Length: 634
Image (tube, rainbow, N blue to C red):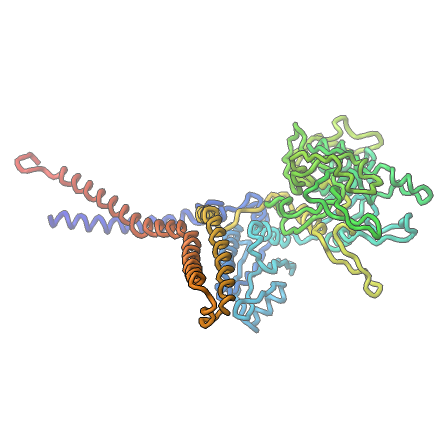
């Protein structure tokens, strides 16, 4: 027996030493290995993220301003703050030492707080009257900087994109080049209808400030190779040479933001002050069929999406009231793609006479809707919207199709050339240059079926203040364009980083139980409340007869006194039953909570203990079976 105990103790020591040895071995041999067991793969970065981290050449310093104690006073930030920190640490671990994370807890009136302000990180009011910080700033070797002022929990699905975008901007500090081709008067030009000069469109002016914007002539035969984003606004009646240049840019993996339109109200190409009728009847649709077909996109320039569910009210003539116009749409969040950074943070997008987009049947590209109509929509001929005096007439005989039409989409993938027979007449390639027949890199395209949405009147309120033009945004059209340019200006790896699931997981079963309880008890609760209201009204009537005082009871007959007591008792009964009904709303939820507590506190430990006991009995029986019995040879 003593020998068996000694062997058992020695075995435990040997196992302990083996465990310590394996731990040390794994720490060295498996360093950097991670296993993400979260349901939504929260700590598994996208492939594009890993490629961006691997392409960093110079070290980048990240300064995470994190008010740990102050954030604990906010339940939402208390959970989200550590989530952001864990994700930043995950990126640092994958960057091969190129990212250096500095976690800073700024105290009031400290140098760290001044540093946060200097880098552009914004503090927000805390519950105790102080200021808390949850932002990120980064610097590169050339003194460039980029900032995320505050990590908004509402933008958690785009946490990876926002942080990786900051890293990408610091690793590639050169200002992106945007080549802009438009047949609309976006740059500001002479208006033949008014005889004056137009101001540049605000969308165009903002892009000129934020990017290295290069206007591209409508007759251009070459796209500069340093172009990061090619913007095409209502590319109407382009020459074959210009279309070929766009085609070759797309085949080289171009990033394109395209606006087409079945009825561009701002198209003044046919305007003639001497013949206003000709301007109204001129063709204002975008003709870009050859390239759209090569890119796998269907667009009918003769049809407009009429959407009764998102129709806005407009004033057609001065002195008349507003009328519903099913061709002028105000899209809300239900119309936006929820997992795409281009539509994140938008509140409303206004469109006017937009067309419908769809993928072609044999398309090899990936077609992802960004903006969609409601199901209360239909396609109407564009001619019905010309010289329209009464928008209400569009609803005469209106029959919604029941389907949602795509108004903007993201298109990605490899595409064939739109010129399979070679360059068009008049195009001469440089010596040694060959025309591409298919994509050398995947195309990244965002196409919007409305060009008028860029015009100021659809998303801005403009006023004159002491001779200065003041603008106030009433819709998110400008933000949509800015998001699209920011996204496309990055590399294909950055574009591939999409929205992720949130860190916080709802208690789906609890919410389902709460909804079921509400449905089950709501009718009874409303019935009791009506009875209670009726009883209180009768009590008030009887008490008013007695003056509402005990002395006034002399004015009531015995039958009335008995009825008064009955109503008072009935009132108490109903109120008691009502409290019981309201308490019953959470009964199933409390029952579920108690069940989980019993399982976690009692059942699981008992189950593990039973399993351990069974294993111990089994091992004991094996040992006894191995010991020779008396009278048996050993």
